[in-house]
Structures are given as C-alpha cells and as structure tokens.
Image 1: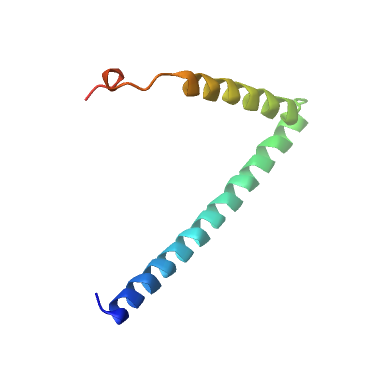
Image 2: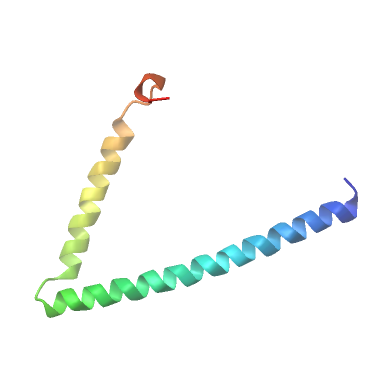
Length: 79
C-alpha cells in the first residue's frame, strides 16, 4: 500500500470513529435525560430511586460473580 493510500485509510477510519463517538454521546445524553425523568417520577410516587438503583447494582454484581465462576466449555454451547 502506498503512503497516500495508508493515509487515506487512516483519515477515513478517524472520521468514522469520531462520528461514532458523537452518536454515542448523543445517545448517552438521551438515556441520562430518561433516567432523570423516571427517577423524578419515582420520587413523586414516594419511592427512593437511589435505593432501587443500589439494589439493582447489588443484583447485577451477584450475577456477574456467578458468570465469572461459570466454567466455559465447548460442550456448554449449542452449535
């Protein structure tokens, strides 16, 4: 590959990745706004969203630990 071809390849890759990053940032902002909306509504209903989120984190940590302890073996997969 010539130098100009390599340079074009890398420029194109960087442009694509920067566009992807911008899109991910936009999506994260939307998700954050939705989280705030639902947390606010939970508070209005008398439920502490912080407590709910803490319980959710603990549950996720337990599932993650169980997944980490699971043995990965080819016989465990349906192919």
